[in-house]
Image (cartoon, rainbow over all chains, first blue to last red; front, side):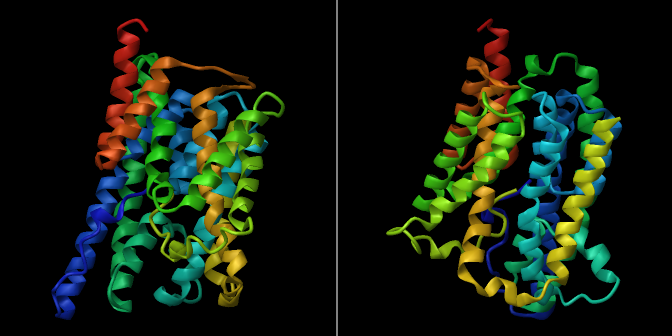
Length: 251
Length: 103
């Protein structure tokens, strides 16, 4: 689940503290609601892949990071190994650790509160938090986004899963396209951002497709992480130093 | 039952990563190579997922015209800067429509 920067309000001309604060709240609610609705897609995709409604809901409650959830559902739907599927899903969640590294300073949470705040650290909350002009509004933006998204994501997961369970053959409705289409939409800003990203993407796709007939399902995707090394090939290094702002760009 | 284990393990693993980042000393990010690699890994993983979900069925590769047309429609929608949910709706509608038409 992710969104594009266009959904974040532009740095507003509002100069008062309360003006900045309400802008941050608007950002957070807007992103939270818009992206949270894509839980419908996840719920439907999960049930289509063979998870029960309860499993889809527990996955959303515990994991709360869309790409990993779609990934696990995708491997299960493809008849893949559960261990490889789980490892791939967790590996995909690795970028949240990087977001957390960055947000730790900005949010300045300490002690047990970190146990709660951690769950809210995802693409969207990071994107909104880092788009704010100062630390106070960054905190506001983070919490509003995280809470509204957590609520809508879990509610719509239930609706999507329960709905898909009643719909019969999901392929008739084109629901099998939702998984890859979601990833494509999430990845789009990165793919259009630089040539290195395109090379890495192409390399990863080739690795995954070539490995598919040879290895158990789920493993080819993990293997494709090696394509990230393409970014270190000589001559092109440093081409995409703009990559500093990656928040909100991948699920 | 083992699907339940995968669901719970994925949830706990993803949570542990978020918490881990929150409690890790900040100096880890100082190495630009670490930043760069971790920055590109999601691109690789997500693209691989798109490829596998679009073309693989278990260990066999298959070309499903309605599904690929749906993805192509998603690309077109993204090029037109359509909102997230519109992209998904267009992709599903194209695939469903082609299947309804018997392709």
